[in-house]
Length: 416
Image 1 (tube, rainbow, N blue to C red):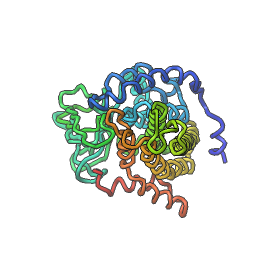
Image 2: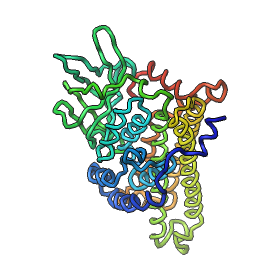
Image 3: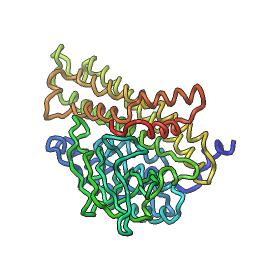
């Protein structure tokens, strides 16, 4: 009962939503204005990400007492949907950083939290490097070993989303100390000469996320930045749910962007295919398609924010030291459970929008196809079928979905 009551009683002041929209709204508009050009030129959004960081986007979830905005999950994910509407590539590129902030919030070491919150509030960005092409998550080829009294990181990671933009990279590895092997996470600076990030992502969507390969060669590791896996959070974490909800926020943003661009397309047409006497903006078929997709956009945004509210409930409980296992399980189930629903709705919306204009809607200059491609690519990460099985186990047997995912990560090959 005590955990449930905490949902309605946040323990710390949060940023005002209007304040956040006022800060980041104009930046989102500038990002959106260049989205099609960046897509055509395959120009990675270095400048756009740095503008966001300079305005404080990277510290939205950092507590106010550490120099952040102290935004709630609902506030944060509302902004993330808006950013996804401007350019979903950037949402994906920031996913590792978003997860790292939650990792830091739940870390048991006060000095670790203080150090990293300071770096984040100063505008530094943390990327992500976890996936490998062989092995299992708990038995990775990337390793930390000691040589001449210095810890060194060596290995190759794939799908290192956002790391090409980052100042630091969080890396999953195995710490080998004699006969002992411990799964760990480490943070290393991208400025180190042994860190080589390559823009070799070749997916047909989300082309500008920097999701390429990173090679680590004798990279020095600060022992203070080495954490045994699962040792950081004494009362659990919303990390799994956060990572998945970032995908859903990107999808909600994609749907909003697609609807906006197709609406402009319809308004600008002087005729329609089957009845030239009726302006396109009065064509019943076009209006029906736009109306259906409007409903999708509104529904998926509400779904994302509803799931974010579940994260707020669990996070609030953990912030005061509660063993919030039930709230964490409910939050994981909420996010994982709606994942398939959001995917199906957004893929349907971004596909049917071409019905409003015939072949002219497929003109490469409009780049409307990028919305479906991006949605399909985001939906292929962390397949929803696995999450739905975990949720089914939660519904039928009360099994915590996040705990099941942890077990799967120790038994399933890392590469997609």
